[in-house]
Every structure is written in structure tokens, then in C-alpha cells.
Length: 230
Image (cartoon, rainbow, N blue to C red; front, side, top):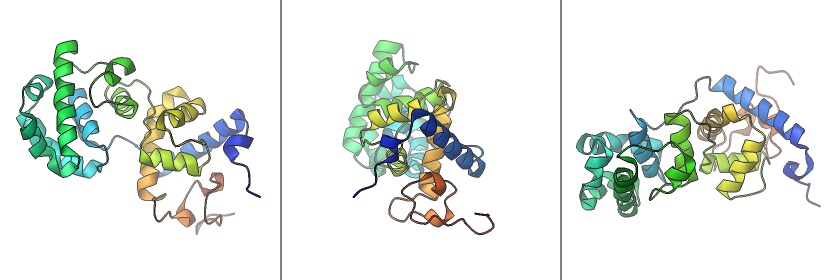
């Protein structure tokens, strides 16, 4: 008989307490969590986040300096040849679709918002190539508006922690927001992403080294790390 998921059995109060312990432990490991995409303004962050779909932040950071040097704002990028954009961003993968989305996004920014990046979820997600994850990244990191971006790391870890029973990013976002203080949404996403890159690695999770394994029902090794009492 399968053991019921913690998501189905623990109370909202218990889930909030467990999430607090998780974030406190991860915060001790990553004391200054921040967006890994290099940017100087909301426009650069928006474009970089579109490029980050199915691509590493490191690769995006290698591409964006040349892209922004050639097309520094929405007006310039809206007027660019889509093939020129595609050539610059080729190494990020899916470059043809991304280049069309980026140009379309910039045209919409110019036509609807005077070339400025809007500050609301509805306005952002109405832009070509912009979903809730991208909008949450921009809102939280460029404008200080609480948002909980759900990327592949957050989705995987939320399921391993059994803080959700869904693979749908929007539903996961709802579940995580419900048990996390609103002011901590953006930072919480950063912490889960950093944990996913450093320890809870998809194909080789380092459970024995994990500081949150006691709150993780999926942990492969419940023994404490060296130097820590049980």
C-alpha cells in the first residue's frame, strides 16, 4: 500500500510550518539569493528571461551582452530583423521561436506601453512569449512586486517535498503561495532554484548532504551529515 502524500494529509498550518523550516535552512546555505540572469534594467531582464526557456542562465548571460549592445531598448529590438536576432541568440536553443517572440514582445512594448516594461501580471502575460513564470521573474526582481516563479527546479523540488500534487506550474504556484508569506515569494523561488542546482540535482540528488531532508519525504538518506547531531 502506498503511503499517502504529505500534501494530502498535513494541515495548512503544518505545511506553512514545514515551508518555513525549509526556507530557513536554505537561507542559511544561500544567504543572499538573487536572480542569476545578468541585467541592468527591467527590459533586459524581460528579454533574458524569455531566452532562459529550456536554456541555462549561464548560456543566456553569454549571449545577452552582444544582443543588448546591438539592440539596447525595446524600440531598437522592435525594428530589428528577426533573422539578426536569431543569429545572435542561436546558442540558447529554439532560437527561431525565441527571436519571433522577442521581436513581437518588443513591438507590443512600443505600441502598448511606450517602450517601457509594464508592472502588472495581466499586462506582462499579454505580451508575446511571456507566461506567468517570466512575468513573476520580472515583477519580483525588477519591480519588487512579490511573485513566485515556478521553473523546472521549483516544480521538481515542490513535488519531492510533497508541497504540491501537481505538475502544472500555475497550480504549483498557487500551492506554494498559499503556504509562503507573500513578502517571501520571490526569495523562496530563488532558494529552491539554488537548492536544485547545488544539491537536489535531478538525476543525482545529494540527499545525504541535504539540509532539508528531514522535511523531505522523498529523501533517499535520512541520516544527518557529518558534524551534525541527530
